[in-house]
Length: 176
Image (tube, one colour):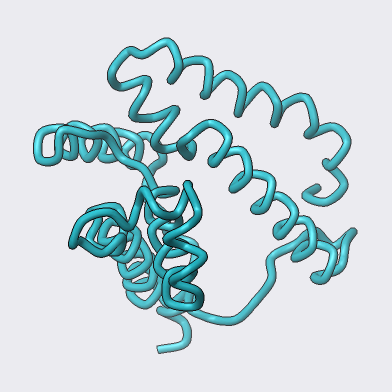
């Protein structure tokens, strides 16, 4: 069993096939919901719900939080929340089926696991901050925007990859 588990560990889909399926998923999402894919809305709904549970007075008096609390629906009653839960469950299922579920930190031999985690945290915080400033994450702004041929989608994608290309030189020792 150990040999078969190790054989399956590095079997991934062809990236072009994955991209093709992602394109079909975006089209399906537009057809069903009238909107493209996105993930930052799920986190926003979760934060609003937690703030409202911890301090209802603050959330109701805050201009930002209060707009999500209007009406009888909970901020968690948002399709993006269910999309994010599905992504997490799908990733877990994929890991289980291919035998890749384990606690580990993948990093270059030139850096420590702690440094890798610190850089991942900083990168995640910067990306989350950027998603709030631009009112959308990469999947919402770039992928869904490009699928609608929106100028903003192309600008988002060029900005994401362009910035990554420009700063990659300075961080290359963390990955090579």
